[in-house]
Image (cartoon, rainbow, N blue to C red):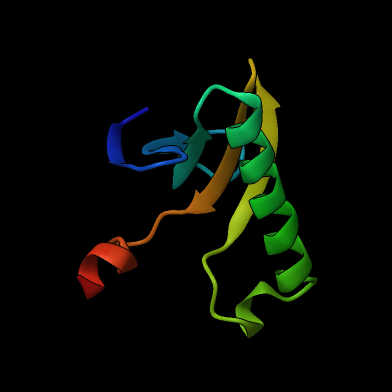
Length: 90
């Protein structure tokens, strides 16, 4: 883990270096500890996979590289982008 990028109602996002898949910087979204939060994060990952399908560049969404459970937390691995769009709009 490099640093915490942001935190919110459902968990936090940290900047990490992915040494396994292409040695790249990634953003990892970690759900809060609890069934409700991990279920929400799991549903988010399922919806993103369904929307993106086989061609994620079609929709202009952040690329999700992976998702998995780890020690009662749900983890979603995204491409690392420049800034939080929600905070930018505010």
